[in-house]
Amino acid sequence: MDSLGRRFKKDDETILAEAIHLMQLFTFNQTTPSNKVREFIEETFFSCVKDGTIPLLTNQGVKPSSVVRIAPREMPFLTTTPLLPETIALRAEEFVSRLREAEILKEVSWEDVKKELNSRTLTETHAVQFMKWLTQENLPSDQVRQLLSTAIVILGDEKLGKVVNLGAVTSFVVMGKIPIDGGLPPNVLPLELGKSFAYRELESL
Image (tube, rainbow, N blue to C red; front, side, top):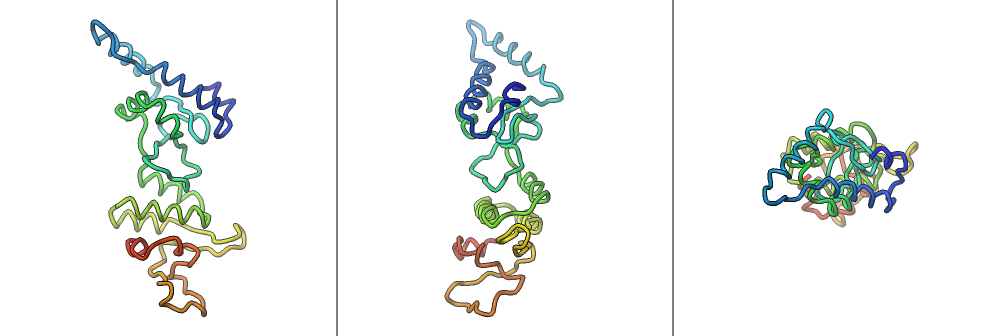
């Protein structure tokens, strides 16, 4: 994995193929006449794992599994959280499943999302992706509030754009029913963010 890390280029199919091949080499299948041989080899392999973590190829390069997450579905608004590529998750499924069973690799949690939101601002595109994810997650209301209050969005230019704190938003515009010629107060969701959502989705937030 160290060699792959030094040669890492995002979306490089050759690097991905090498990582998958390496993981398949350490996928331990059933042995005959006794499966105890396979269990012994597998236990020996995982007992060599230093500090309960192993290096994995992610969208951010090679990272220790303790900071790597696997996304159950697409989460493009996460740009700094190291995620296991979907190709690896599918083509090295047995190895990945074993890592998850051993809790060496974990799924993205709402705390991971909160941590990234705390570390940076969101672009308009990422804010819409984040809100769309939030409408589909069915999280408890207190977690939704925490995530929204952490999300700071910059509309337009990164330096000159309008800053929006999603946690301060309490209302949204119903298109065609509310005139917007006079502008919108800070507690109303900007049209740039709300236009991609159905009424029920915005109501759920």
